Image (cartoon, rainbow, N blue to C red):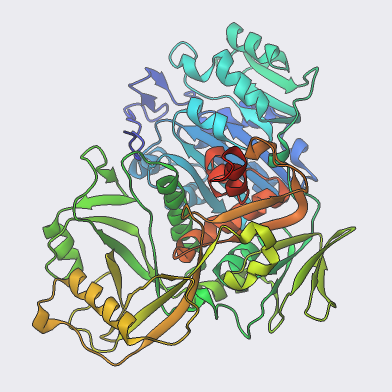
Amino acid sequence: MKSLAVPPAEVDFSDPAAPASPAFGDVYHSRAGGLAQARHVFIAGNGLPARWQGRARFVVLETGFGLGSNFLATWDAWRQDPARCERLVFVSVEKHPLRREDLARAHAASPLPELAAQLIARWPPLTSGLHTLSFEGGRVELLLGLDDARVLLRELVLQADAFYLDGFAPSRNPELWDAWLLKSLARLAAPGATATTWSISRPMRKALAACGFEVGLAPGFANKPEMSVARFAPRHVPQRPAGREAIAPAARHVVIVGAGLAGAACALALSREGLACTVVDALAAPALASSGNPAGLFHGTVNPDDGPHARFNRAAALATQALLAELGLPHQHGLLRLETRLAPAAMHGAPGYVEALSAADASALAGMTLTHPAWFYPGGGAVDPAAYTRAMLAASGAELRLDCSVAALHEAAEGWQLLGADGGIIADAPLVVLAGGHGQLPLLGDWGNDLVVQRGQLSHLADAPWCPALPIAGEGYAIADGLGGLWCGATAQDGDLDPALREADQAENLTRYSRLARLAPAQAPRGALAGRVGWRLIAPDRLPLIGGLAVPGPLEEQLRLQPRRPGLIVCTAFASRGITWAALAGRLVAALALGSPRPLEADLLDAVDPLRFALRRQRRPGR
């Protein structure tokens, strides 16, 4: 059984000049100062800022985040450099991250108070996995991996231009310095990558040399006369798996088909990478199809083994929470997920992400007596999906082309052409993202055969006998409309294309609402038939399809070995979780297109890969 929470660091602040870790018996940085050490050892040692100048993107990978001094110093150096790279991606792993209050204490007298305050404000809940913290309007990203480095490094998909080797001393923390871990860094090195550390450990330098680094010594910092510097220059350049290559690395323009949550999120993420975005939709306005419900939930999930579904939904929910805050979009905060019983005691939750509540405590939050315990997601909640879509589109600056139906795709010499019903060219671009719902199935061809179109009806009660103080989910859901009524639902019928509201479905929704609220039969709600019908596109494993499609030919044995068609990405099958999944999906599409560090671990990339079903059929014919 795996816990979703990461054990936090215990920090000894008794010496303000050098906070220490009692567990490792070592200090976090030199007594001469964390920022000064970072600037000498890691920034100057890696030839920065000169090496990032004129670059579209520069990627730093650090082996121990600690107090965050190296990140703050690097961000500050980027800010101060007029010739800086367009985007800085700082990737760091940490097994024992600081609690937010300890991070604030560590930087209470920071020489970089503005940057430190932004880092503290965006500090994530201490849950395992990758967390993307966005700064400078997306031009600076901190991809923070919380878990054992030996676990996370083998799951990262990126090419690093510079390495900061900064764990506790090799004698105190040998696992961060051994040959196995350093070899995993070599797998992630871009051609000509550099590496630096304050340590001059002979075994460490020998291990770096064995995996392709040219290693030398340079003047050290403060009381250390020397430090290690290295450059990646292997005799044989390792070949990247075909399935992990950038799908459109040189694209500067993208056409996105679909103006709902998925398309808007893709436009926002790609625009932040410098691409000009055109969003095409067959309807007269954004978010008129599946993204057009008046309210919807967003939250993570919990399961005892913290498997792929729980991990993907957690990463997605946290990304949504951060983006809604960044956009300043009004929404309902907090969500209760009722359970007949909670997962085992080991899954007691993670502060700031999910907490286990008794029925009494859940009732106090709901403003109504509940008979079941609940998971409380303080960062979850409810939002108007159409307003969220419009906010993302506005922030992206995308050109909208509405009332524009795409009938077919045609691969051209320099990308893709979108064709109308008459065969005329609607638009063309080196990168096309298919980010629509069930109306876009014909464009997917055989790749859409595994997907199911599901009808859903939600109901509106204008005068509800009980409105929850915060959104509640369980067997159905209830979201207050702020006017004394609420939205509840929703039904699920596969393959049903009837657009009309149905009394039977309304009755089903109201029955679920009554069970949530534990209303007696005499209190059961009645109301005029009111609500909305929409359609979900659902994959058999209840995860989205995000990624490239296979080039013509037989599938390889592994998703990571399968070459993808240049310039074409699918982002669809959001089921009933469009609000939760959109922000993360957009970031992932941008990373897949341009080759930037992926915001998900490799096994989660596989879990949402569009080719996964075809590969399973190939392995098990007839099933």
